[in-house]
Image (cartoon, rainbow, N blue to C red; front, side, top):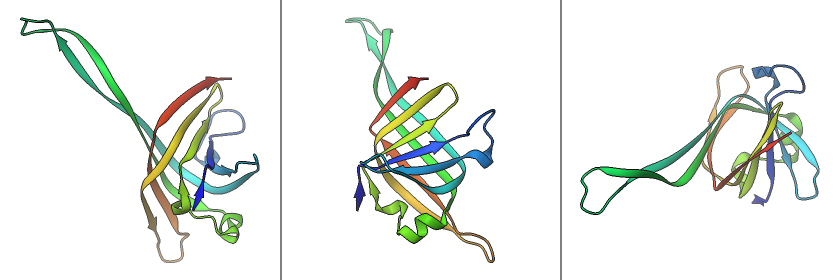
Length: 144
């Protein structure tokens, strides 16, 4: 199993990002990177439970507070590159990885990621694509 890898989702090189500009790279512990797939789309969501706090003797809440945040991500229709296939890199080998999204004004890093579901889609005379859902333990945003 490959571990402690970073997956870097590059949205674009310049200008406004389009779907043709989305790909991801695996960055190993030595800082070397390899483009492993072109991705048609991705989705990142943050969820947290909000609870209300009641005052002693009152039926109505006086405040609300948030509990821990869950980070869920999904990559849809990823096409593996020839280099990744030749090097034997598979999404289901990854564990405890970082997922980095580069945007024009910021970098968003989801760390401690582990996949929960990976699927393949194949059609006659078409490339096989992979879909991946995973959960991250932490999130950090850095402005450029």
